[in-house]
Image (cartoon, rainbow, N blue to C red; front, side, top):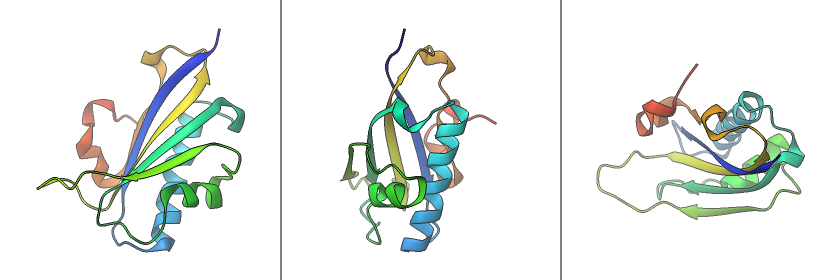
Length: 123
């Protein structure tokens, strides 16, 4: 029986460029799909955030352009500007329809974003 579950992902940019945004969002989304055995129809929606120092491109636009999420409802927002927070960071919360239990879902934290949730990072 399928139900809606949330899967998290995050990555960082070395530089705020559209080329790097496309590359890093594609990497993050591709890993989220492969680690969780997802296909496009499993994804109900996606909520992206970026830190306030990201101006080059909307992360949902990068996901549409690189992994073809053209019919997935997506939103983007700016993270709170908190002193000492990780910069140039892109986060996503995917809402997916799956029969897998929550403990089997694989979150993907890459590059500098590993520091956000080392307890959820694996392989």
